[in-house]
Amino acid sequence: MRNVAFLLAFLLLASSVYAIWQQPVNVLVEDPKHRPVPHAKVIMTWQLSERDQNHEEVGYTDYRGIILFNMSNYIQLDSQTRYLATARVEYGAGSLLVTNSRVFDIRGYPDPVPLLIPVYRVKINVLTPAGKPVGGAMVYIAPWTREADDSGVAEFILPQASTFATIIFNDAQISKNVWVSQDTDINATLDLYKLSIKVVDENGIGHLARISFGNKTYPTDSKGRVSFDPFPGKVANLVIDSGGRSQEVQIQMNKERDISFTFDSNAPKIYDVARTALSDGKKTITAKVKDEGEFASGLSSVLLYWWVNEQEKDPLEMYPTDATTFAVTLPAFSNDTAVSYFVKATDKQGNGVSSQMETYGLPAPPPINHTINQTGNQTDGNQTGGGGWSFNFGGINLWVVIGIGAILIIAIVAYIYIKED
Image (cartoon, rainbow, N blue to C red; front, side, top):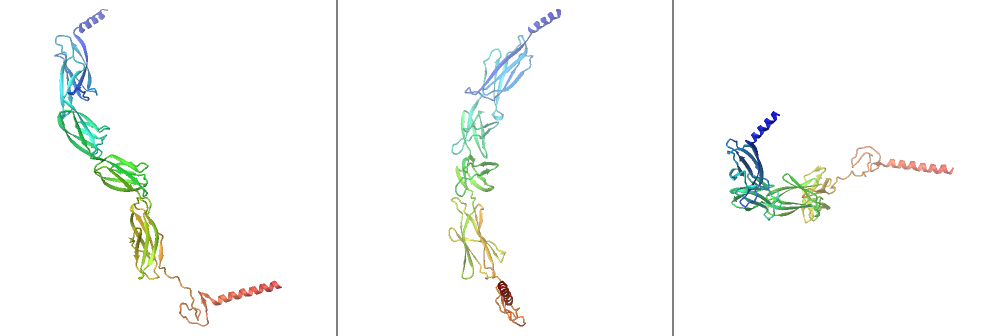
C-alpha cells in the first residue's frame, strides 16, 4: 500500500512539471488569387523550449492545397515554454523554385494556416493547323509534365519566370517560349493533319487492308477506309498490305489529305491473238489486251515469248497500235523452221496472264512413197540393181496385196461349194 501511494505521489509531481503537448495544424498553400496550389512541399518545424531540439515534418498539399500536421512532444510547463512553429513552402525546382514561410503561435492561429506563393496558371492549348485540339499530347516544362486532355489543354502552375515548353505527339514536336508573369493561355500548333485513306479494288469496291507506318499498323474497315487524325506532317512512308500483297507509298503531309489506293487483284485479259504474213516472209503477231475495271492499275508490259526450233529467244516487247492492240514482227524463216510463241500481259500490280502457245512453219512430215522401182529396193529414185518388177504403194508390196486377195477368193468359193453339198 505504501508503494502505491509513493507511485501516485511521483506521478502527481511529474505531471506538475511535464505534460504531453499535441496540436493538429492545417496549412493551406494558395496563389495570389487565393486558389489552391496542389503538390506543394511544406516543411513544419517547431521547438518548444530553449533546451528542446527542433522537430520537423514534411508533406505535400492535396488537390485542395491543404496538408495536415499533427505536432506533439513532451514539454516542461515553465516560463521558458515556447509556443511558436514555422511553416515553410517550397514549389518548383532549380531556377523555377519559389518559397515562402510563416511563423505562428500554436496557442492561437487561423485554421488553416495560409501560405501565399507567387505562382500563376499557364494553359498550353495544343492544336493542329486546322485548329483541332490534340488530346494526349505530352507537354514538358521542367520539372513538370502534363498530358493534354481531350480538349487539347495542359495546365500548369508556374512561378514567375522565363522558360520554355516542349510539346510532343507521336513524331511531331514543337518548343514554345513561355514568359510567366500572370495567368496565361498559350497556343501551340503542331504540324499535324488529317489523313484519310481508302483502299479499293479495280471496280472501286472497298478492300480490306492493313496500313502500316513506323511500327504501327491499322486495319481498314469493311468499306476499305481508315483515318488518322492527327497524322504527323512530314514525308511519310506507308505500307499497304492486302491478301499477302503490298504497296509501298511515300506521301508528303503538309495539308489534310484524302487518298485512294487501288489493289488490282485481277489480271488483264488477252483477246484475238492473230498472225499476219508479210511479203518479205516476216510474220506480225497482234493481240488485243485490256486491263478492265474503272480503277484498274493499268498495263505494265505486253511481251511475246518465242522459240525457234525449240530454242528459247529473248522476249520481245509488243508495241501498241491503238488503245488495246499490241503488235510485234518476227523475222522470216524457212518453211521447215518451227516457230512457237505466246503473249503475256502484266498489270502494274503484278497480275499476269498468258495466251495459248501457237506454232507455225512446222517441218514437212515424211512423204508417202509413190515411187515405182524396177528392182523392188529403190526409193526416192535411187536404183540399187537386180531384176524383176516391184510395185510399192506407200511401202506396201503389190504382190502381197494380190496374194491376200487370192486367198480370200478361194475361201469364199470353198464356202459356197460346201454349202451346196
